[in-house]
Structure formats: C-alpha cells, structure tokens
Amino acid sequence: MKIDNWTINTNKVRAWSVNQEPCDNLTAVMLSLQLGDNCDNDELRSTYWTAIRSIGSTLEGFPAARRGRESSLTTEQTQNVSIAEELVAAAMNAIPTEYHAILLALIVPHGRTGGVFEHFSDLVANSRKQGHNYMLTSIKEERWNGLDMDEGVPQIAPRPTSEEKDESEEIDG
Image (cartoon, rainbow, N blue to C red; front, side, top):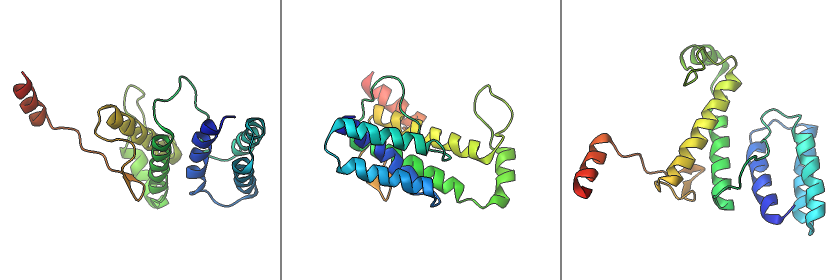
C-alpha cells in the first residue's frame, strides 16, 4: 500500500478510535497502525492494513473502505473531514439515553424512506452522513477550503440567503 493511501485510510481509523471503548481488538488495531507507520515498504504496509481491516470489522462503526473513484481532496482535507465526522458521532453519542426515545420519535429520515430511525445508531450514522455531505458541498462551493478547523470544528462560511443570492444575480445580470 502506497504511503499516501496508508495515511488517508489510517487517519480515518485514528479519528474513529478516539471515541471507542478500550478492548483487545482496538489495541490490536492500534498496534498494527503503529507497526505500519514504522515500516518502510508498501508490501508490508498492505499486510498491516489487511490485519487492521480484518480486526476492525468486528468493531461497531469501523470506517469502511473507500469505494468508487479517487477523491479530489488532499490528504489533509480528507483527514479534517474524518475528524469532524467522528466529532459529530461523538456529540450524538454523548446525548443521554433517556433522550433517545424522543429523538427517535421526532427526527425522521429524509426522503422517501418514510418511517423513523429504528435504532439510535441509525440516527447517529445519518447525522454523520449529513455532516460529511455538507462539508464536501462546502468545499465544492468554495465556502470551506477543507483545512480551516478550530478544535476539530470546520470553519465553513454559511450558505447565502435567498436575498443575498438575488442581490448577487442583480449585480451580475
């Protein structure tokens, strides 16, 4: 595994691991990360990454491997997006369990899916996905460079209001 891919993939795992309860499998993942960081050849890094994926897949919320085309984000941007996603999940998971029922009853999936979230973890996953999509859209719309962070919080310029859009169109038009 090339060092750039190693860095991108392992940064996601590191960000995820911060909010995990200690256990033997997490210790094994973290040790494999350290060993992979210290090795100096692509083949050995691939071996460590295979072990990390295998062990990590037994842990809830372990970051899934990327699928599809290559990201246009830099390594640092990808890392910042991952850190912010994990902070969203941590914030949601910090909500006391006595409030989960009301949130599950009133915060519903968007779109044509209908119904409600079956489990609180589904609501957390949806919140993480919404944050991810908002960050990528903000980068695309040049409201965030993917780098400006304040204690893990992306510094994103808000979307323009309808009035601001109308004013801009009048000036441009």
